[in-house]
Length: 172
Image 1 (cartoon, helix red, strand yellow):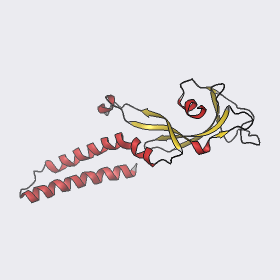
Image 2: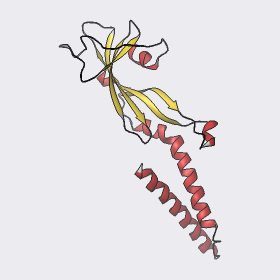
Image 3: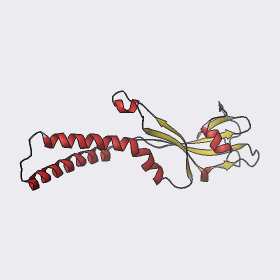
């Protein structure tokens, strides 16, 4: 967050400096209103560019073993351009290297999902996905595990629809 604020301010100062330099090279004095106006416009467009390009920039930095499962775009009434085309500001991914098939039941798979949000902390959750019954459950530190690292009994199951992105990614 602090890097974003710092970068936005730097963009404003840099654009103002370029305008001042261009007016000096032109041999004229810049009007008093033009420098803050150009700085504000540059910061505004930088903020919009950052919002709309965040997902692509972040996705290219992910390791090859990480697959994006689902993306989320949020509209914001205080940013009216998002009502036309909302930027992707959070997504869910899985780590294929941490996908483990239960040796006792091939329909059960343990997978780590990553929940990423722009400007937020990354959350890692471990799921037990039962592909045959179309359900999943969270594996927490309190979950009792068998010798293979799979839960002996799940406290709570959540149904997954046939079109669930996690189910499609894990069970295919």
